[in-house]
Amino acid sequence: MVIEAVEMGWAAFVIAVLVPAVILITRAGRFWQRVTLPPAPALSLFLLLHAAVTLGSCRYPPGPLLHRALEAVLIAGGFLFWLPVLGTRHRLSDPGRCMYLFLAAPLLDMPAVGMIALGDTFGGLAMIVAMLPIGIAAMVVTWRWVIDEERIQTAAAHELSSESPVG
Image 1 (tube, rainbow, N blue to C red):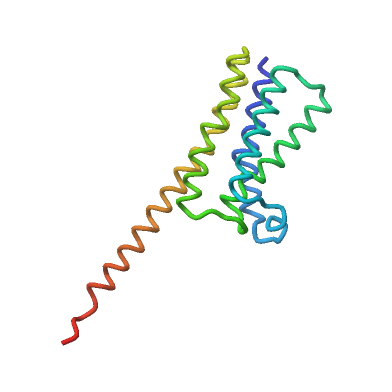
Image 2: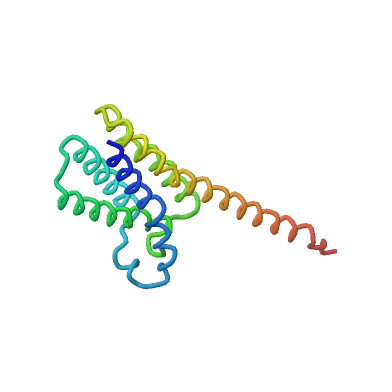
């Protein structure tokens, strides 16, 4: 039971922390431009994939080989999920990234709630805790957007005040 909870927490941590870190480190390359999807299909596909793998594995535990294959598919889906936020092609605007992440965070927790309902309390809670970085990323993106907007408005106000009236 504890081993499964650690595995669930680790899988969620990989998707919520390690996958975006890899994208940030390697996004200058052209690979991500070729594999990215537009935001709506990326989010929808990942939400369905995440729910199917999580709940399916909880209800019908796979063998070790299938378990590893499902993890690999879920991680690949995690890359597609993060690319509209961190990638270069199909990248969302700042408000779009905020909405995307704030929408995704609770929807990605729903399979964990399902796991808890099915009796895997430790696994579900481990997944919820390990996915918290998605909510933190949403807050960071929002904060950066607010700061950038404030900078733009301050610069515009400064520019207007420094103009002298033409007389």
